[in-house]
Length: 459
Image 1 (cartoon, one colour):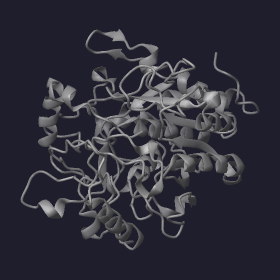
Image 2 (image 1 turned 90 degrees about the horizontal axis):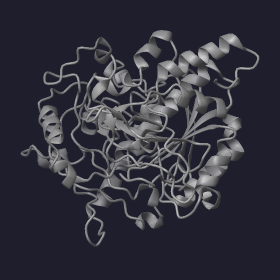
Image 3 (image 1 turned 45 degrees about the vertical axis):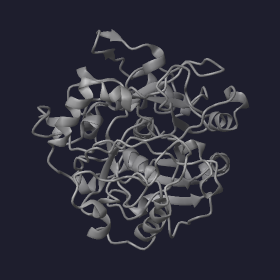
Image 4 (image 1 turned 30 degrees about the vertical axis):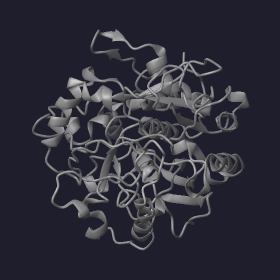
């Protein structure tokens, strides 16, 4: 899910300004640098391209991108020197020591598309690409938003361009990419997976998307389809970014999917300062009043693959503002009349050129040496949990979705609110923060104890 930020709340929050001042002092590293004053709301209109884009009609705060291991916030944890703190927060550093990386596990990503020429996403790892809008094909893929590529890299990016620092949770996975631009296309993509998922040996379905539910899950087409898929695949869906209780989005309202809320690691190596991400939607689900989310994962300032010239690319207008320390991002401003800025069409022309015709990873006109951007939202948290599911499947390739969900939830860690040292309630954190190491270790123990039937449920 794309993030909506309550700026009035942020402006009156001391921690926001302290963190922001710290971020602005960071040195550029691994292609990530501070981008001050990107404080505009974005709106992707429902009527664009004749598509009902409720799934991305959320607002996004790109925020300041930064390298978190810096002079201001020194990382005294050696793990934080190898992996960014959002990955250390789920104990991924310990998983790497086990040699588990999700090798050859297939993850289907239903999102805004992907590009082939990002160094962290090797084209050879993409088994299949389908665009349900008909705007692109496997020879000329698109990601006009930049959201799908970012999500895919969080799941399984190699981290090649950052020496592994910004790698995905499961850098050994393979992908099935299903590009969607409307609610109707989400339905088509889920129906396609029902018919074709096993053909490509899909194990995990990532749904970093969501719409406001109008009814319970049984009468909600997307949620019902996702729940049906969850009988054969591990389906991971975003809780949403609507701040309040009873705001879980569809398909996250489906009981059998793994619904993911977010935490804010504060971009530090110290887990004791982690909090629930302010924008994260909370349970219970509307209408059915089911206990959701199931788990939470890092959702704030997640570094992932950048798509040059995309809607969420903070650098796309940099050349027009060489005399200013503020990068203008006025392409898609949400105003009173929902008027689309005329520059929107230019984005598409520029984006088409950069993605379809530019296959040179070192083209400075396109990349400008910046291969990552930071985005916030439960989209990224969902991708992280999908990555953890892939790690489990590497250890237990024949595990059922029910077992994978149970491993993830039963090995999660409850967190406390640092302000009062009390546990967050179940509607905020579910079972707690996903723990990749605990999950993999438990999967390994099941595999060792019962090779013939690894689907023994947890005690």
